[in-house]
Image (cartoon, rainbow, N blue to C red; front, side):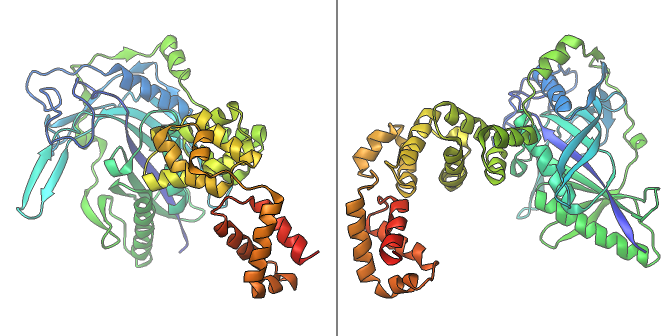
Length: 477
């Protein structure tokens, strides 16, 4: 039997607010356990919740970014279940009246073309705490710092696709949430988590098969690997004449397998009922308009605009728009006078390498667009070679000095005098006679090595294009 996979994603996004969803405790990561808890988020009797207005606004912005229809009437519900990290014995969520429905997310499909899947619903809920298992003592400890942090749950419609497409969809969703300023979506810190569902059905059939859900996947790689494992596991069972049990499973990365966690609950098992401590409320046109004004340009639209307006390559445009701050930085540099093509290659090359080396985002660098544009202008004018500019970059970031002043202080000005360069080229020809002869006889690949010898001798200061032209003129007149 030939099957196709039906995939669904339930994504939990921690919204970027200063305080928790229903109390004034700080919403922060990495603090001393239980140092960010109060009677409300620790579930003390008589403590009453108050809705965080900014969290509600961010949720509306996210829903609009996904093209959803925001409900006029909203209400919170109690989702009842018992777990050590849920101090109240229930979670305040939205069930009967979700914030928004019927949106979509676009990503690159398996064939390289655009793929769009539907968003079934978007709703707000509070996060649970965290259980820490101590292997050495056999104890399980509860940290309530995360309890009550505002979550946005985004539920996709079921769609026929591949595990690789599920990963691409999740990556696209993370990029959109970052662009809209909803969350930092750092999976290592748990601010983006995914539950992935998969079922199989015979090709050309329309009825959905029995699905399994893999909980709390915390990396794109694990989402793809877990779905691939489930795909293969379910095929083996069905082809062997068995049936799929509806269940919740967990992913054990060390062994590359999913394991049964519990049989899947239905909605009735949670005994939902309206949250009595929070009134129903209405989303009016004024609030919708305010939230719509916060919508950013979408990543795909920005990429196409950079290509059309500035003539940057598709490759560079993808790198620039991977992060909203990077794209904004590029446009600020262009506005400050930088050549678009040159600055795009510089940001996507040396600057991105320096960011990766430092392990930080571009917003954390002490390098303003005017300084960045000044550095690019020195490279474009030939006063500074790209190699020297790369050497200059770390000190420019750390010191905040003007690029021209640093070039002078570090003696990095580019050598463009043709007489001086020709002397170095002829010295290299004499010192590397075998290589020079190979190039003279037509072996083009040797030219890069010869140019590299001159650049090394000049400490990266020689104008590389002039070096290249002089080798051609001397060895292939």
